[in-house]
Every structure is written in C-alpha cells, then in structure tokens.
Length: 286
Picture 1 (cartoon, rainbow, N blue to C red):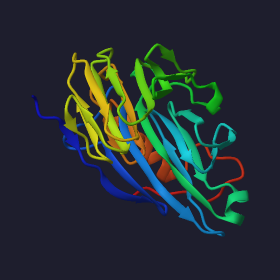
Picture 2 (tube, rainbow, N blue to C red; picture 1 turned 60 degrees about the vertical axis):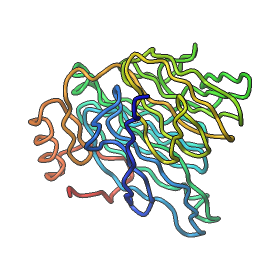
Picture 3 (cartoon, one colour; picture 1 turned 180 degrees about the vertical axis):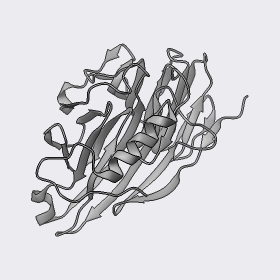
C-alpha cells in the first residue's frame, strides 16, 4: 500500500486567534484552487474580549469562512456588513482590490463567546484575478445536505456527492463538511484530480491507514478511496481542478504575476486602496 502524504500544520496566531495552517506548505502549495487553509481552533473569549482582525487588503483570491461555533462580523470595502454564524458560508472575491475586517460582534463581546471554524483561500483563475470584487452570504439552510446510513455530508462549495452548493466558485471545486458515525464508511470518488482530507476529530482509516487529527492528507489522483470510521468523526474534504499555472503568495496577496503583488504592496503602503466604511484601524505591511 502506498504511503500517504501527510501535512502536519504549523501553529500560528492571527490577531489573538490561535490557528493551525496546513496550506501552503513545502510539501504542497495548492489543492485544486485551495492555496491557503486555516483551522481556527476552538477558543473561548471571556466577556470584553474577542477576535478583531482590522482592515487588510486582498487581490487575486476568494476567501471562504465557515464556522462550527460562534459568530463573526464581516465588513468590506463594498459596503457589506454581515453576521456569519455556524454552518453559514461567507464568500468574498477580491478581484483587483478589496479590504475587509473580521471581528467578534459587539453582542458577543459583552457576554463572552466561543469561536471555532475554518477559513480557506481559493486562487482566482487568471481571467478573474483583476476582475470585479464580490461578496455573498449563504445561510446554513441554503447549503445542500446528504444524510444517509450514518454519514452526513454538507457541501460547502462546488459540486460533489450528487450535491451542488450555491456558493459562486470560479473554477471546478469540491469542499465538503463530513460527519461519520462509528462503523460507517464513505467512498471518496475520483471526480477531481486534486483532493485532500483535513481531520478535525475522531478515529478514521483511509484504505486501512489511520489518519491523524489536525492533519491534511493528500489523495492520489485518479484513485477512489474509502474512509472507515472507528469512532464518531468529523473531517472536511477539499479539491478541484489544478490551477491554470503557478501562483505567488505574499502576505494577503495571491497572483500569477509577481508584478501584481508588488503593485498591490505599493498601493497599500501608500494608502491608495478601497476602505471599509466607518473603519479607521488597519493592518500594515509586514
């Protein structure tokens, strides 16, 4: 049996929120359109504190935020102001330039809260890298669900398992939230050439090999593989078509042309960038 390629994430801290980040890594720069993967670890914020990621810019990507617990307020330079709760999808396409903030809502600051979820970045196709910016919010009950024989799949984005998400992805994409009960199995089809599993919790085997919690496991192209749950478990599956060429990533910028990143850095440093209405504080270039 071929050894699995396993990516163990590095621990980071984003404005006080602890995260695990398996992508990008030296072993793998992207999985389908996914170029960045943050697991926001379950965190308790006591009353008077919370997450507060001030204004920061993006180009050439879409961000997708998906929570298991808690709530985030999303605001951006398009004028969007949205509360995002468990099971919702917050989808923002940067295009040529966008700014946003993410913070704990005021109502939760007063009483204390928990936060647990995922944020991924999907590189835009070259034809959309410098296009228009866009934001959309998709409530949990708008996402399609398959619940059969102890395996529950919610399709967060893209198409898979005979489901199609309403999230307006820009290239062939698979992003599924999977819960498996003890002693159940799930066949992962080879619909996409690039796929990976991220284990959140539980004991599960992939074609007989045990997977580690908080690890990203790359799946072989063209191979159907079977998950077998030894306990109740929770994982996500990501994948899609390969990118239409390599991408450079620098801070919050993603682009196929390094010149676009240098231009974006210069514009942000000079203050020549869209701003979020009503917001003053911002994160400076590292």
